[in-house]
Image 1 (cartoon, rainbow, N blue to C red):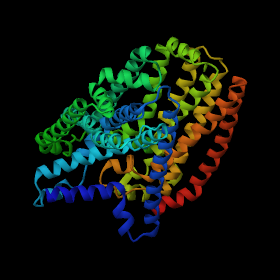
Image 2: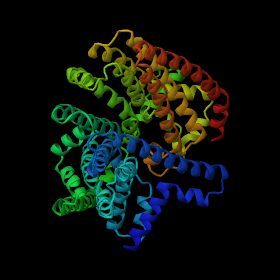
Image 3: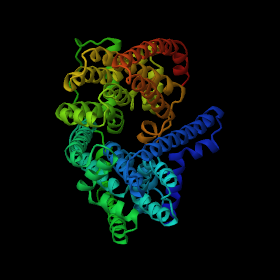
Length: 529
């Protein structure tokens, strides 16, 4: 138990960046870490404020509305991110061989890994739970009993997602380990699992949500129908002791099952995943040629798909966008009917533009493209190539994913919903310009705040400061023009189109300046890494 406490303390301090802020001798690195922590706190406060404001506008709000929605969102986000990252968080640490040489029980190592993943999912609840408390306090529902019950339930919220992500990711890892190209197969298998999950969520939310509405109440209603512990959670918030005991029992059993499964399969699966297959030498093909850009671009593609966590974490936004487009095509009548019923048909095109931009910029690959090189970056910096050629290859990887998705969405959505066809070029200009912005801005952020000393892929994919800053950029790039377009949509949709068009031109001007920075200052910083 003592060893488990030491491991958890080390993992949590590394996860929060406490040790780096306290003991690093590099003042710039210390300042970056402190700023990263401040940014995370700021983002959490912003989400709490926005969530509390949204909860306050829900008709018939009571103590279960905010906490029920927090439970739903935490569960869904944990599953979305966990299916691709669980394998890395459970088996991707580079300290396993060192721990085996120490007098530490295997059970302590296993439990510490599961708790580490559990804590990373708990972070998602920070975006919603404080807002639920604020909304309850404003409405006068906050009591001592509610606080005590909610704290216990919130502490147990990630248990079932942890179990589900562990089972799915370990199964995918086992199947992929039987092939030579195990990393690529694991990436595609994780991506397919995530797509199936998102498709199921979208389908059930539209079909089951018809009876309960499309708002927060409807969402918690359909989620309770497909996931019974959600009903126990809301009943326990009200003070139902039986429901509280059921939720606690299921959560504890789920956590114990996660530890047991990992304990049984860890050694064999770890060896398979970290064994490099021998490739038969087929000789040199002297006639095969490739351009410099082509070689660098192929390298980026291989690096991207060699990391299941890196791929699934950065592709989730584009997957959400495509699934949302498909859902709008299938359920276009229900969406239009709901918008008309809420007297929001004039706002729909402006809202869609804001949501599409948010999806496109959710997690750009360039925000962690430099950090992904890790300790092997010196190989790239020592090659006799221009820095801008390296940047172009990394940007091309980002644009390969983002621009086609944006163009497809800009064409399909106006046709599916019967919007004015002028929205097609407006959406295309908006999404392509924002895709360019997120690409160059993410690369600039990663050059300014690289994380090359990572011990686990999750450190640079999900916890890097450049990732946090890129999320803020995408949030601002979607909310600022989106809110202006919604406000001006009261008068005419053409004013919303004009807002988005002007914003796109401003974005393209900003992209030009950032690209100029990459060619000069960015190249210097890259050589200094």
